[in-house]
Every structure is written in C-alpha cells, then in structure tokens.
Image (cartoon, rainbow, N blue to C red; front, side, top):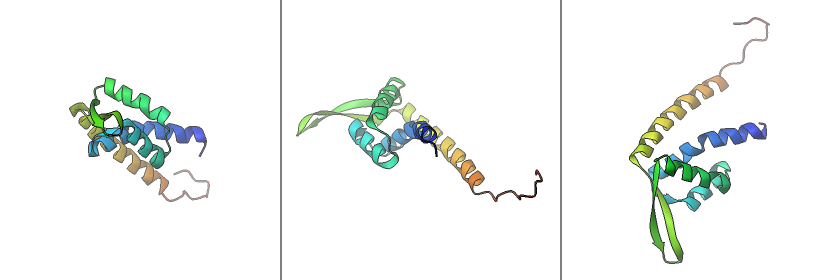
Length: 116
C-alpha cells in the first residue's frame, strides 16, 4: 500500500481509537499516545493536537491527578457528547468496515470479457 494512503487511513480512524480507549477508562495523553503508537503506528505528534481539538470540541474533559513520582498528570475522560460521538462513530465504522470486507472477499469476476 502506498504510504500516503496508509497514513490517511490511520488518521481517519485515530479519533475513533482515542474515543474507544477513553470509553474503557480515563487516561492521560502519554499513555494514549503510547498505546496508539504500539497498536497502529501513530506518533505522538499526531495524537496531542487531536486531544486538544477533542477537548475544544467538548468530546473530552481533563482533570489533574497528583503523581508520587513527579508533576501531576492531566487525565482525559469522555464527556456525554464524547460518549455519543463514540457510539455514532463506532456504528459508522462497523458498517463501513463490513462493506469493505464484503468487497474484499467477493469472488473475482470471470475473465471472459463480459461486464456484469
């Protein structure tokens, strides 16, 4: 796959992945970034601006938790709007991914030159 397409596909689902991680539990940005870097190969430079945008869009909110080994950590949690966005985007993704899978698994057309 050309690199540009792969990157665009990853960027297209990055917000959904962040919402999914936060739907499971509150988390801080570094841990979210590390998980997404490991799982889908997205760098921190892409994730931090997304987290700020999600916060300004009202999908996530932050709170501080004191850390015994350094400065307080800023944790992110989904807002009610974020939960609704997650459910809507998840449903859209599942519908889309099933349609793509159907296309990818369709039998190859016959090579007789006929157009169906």
